[in-house]
Image (cartoon, rainbow, N blue to C red):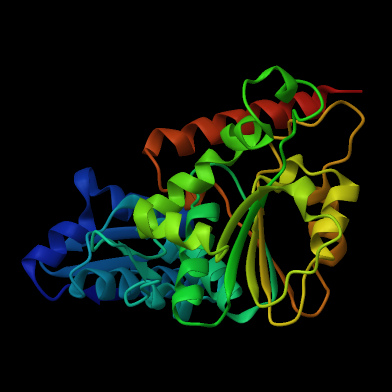
Amino acid sequence: MAQNQWVVQNNQAWMMIMGRGDEHLKSLEKAFNVKLTARGNVIAIQGAPENQDRAYKVLDLIGEWIYSGQPLRPHVVDSAVRAVTEGAERQFLHLLSENVYTTTSGRVVRPRTLGQQLYVEAIREGTLVFGVGPAGTGKTYLAMAMAVNALRAHEVERIVLTRPAVEAGEKLGFLPGALEDKVDPYLRPLYDALYDLLGQEAVDKYRERSTIEVAPLAYMRGRTLSQSFIILDEAQNSTYEQMKMALTRLGEGSKMVVTGDQTQVDLMPGQRSGLKFAAKILEDVDGVAVVRLTDRDVVRHPLVARIIQAYQRFEEANEANTP
């Protein structure tokens, strides 16, 4: 049987490409139904010609990744497989050079998976972007980094961050303090991301000048948001009517990113999630992009991806057994 051969350039790259217990090669074998045999500095690829070609392309991608000085981890191999399968090699290679933002502490914020790279490109090029996916995929944080970068580059005049307070009609009244104190727990994750990106002193100054606004979704009604970068977070907890209201706030020179996880809806029974319907209704509208992130794009602890996969299997089995 004819086989391809892929040559490794140095010993350090050889060890990284193999992975612990040959885990990276095993991932490629499973992904493309090929047999990979490593001898010396050569990896022989056996299998159907088309599958050999795909495996060879993945080895090329992860080789470039290693030669650029990046550590090779399982999620990177998964992203390379996905890139070749979907014809998105260019987007994968952008992961090598894409820097979204540099924090005040000097940490570089960049996409770490192919899905995140596609998400960042959609935000950069589009006007309205839906980032839909499970926890830990960087939906909110990357959108926030893009917003701060746009503000500092004077592409927009302000940032507007909003999310639904889904318990507003039931439990907020029992919390102490004024209305701002009552909604603060719902908005705290947005503040935390801002402090991480800009530092608390800069965030406080921006808020004093209303350059950055953080508010519950209900506060958006009746407004037109122009020259703004708007992020609607936790959008799965907006109702159908709230989502329609929020999307129509978009004004001249503005960009909006809507993020959410359709598997974590906290609405009352009978209420329709605005995110689910909006992503479906608007997916083919010019100027709108819907980026669906998956467990392959989770960049928190590796256990998070396995937890998500386990819940997905459980829920799919229950749906199949439901009459």
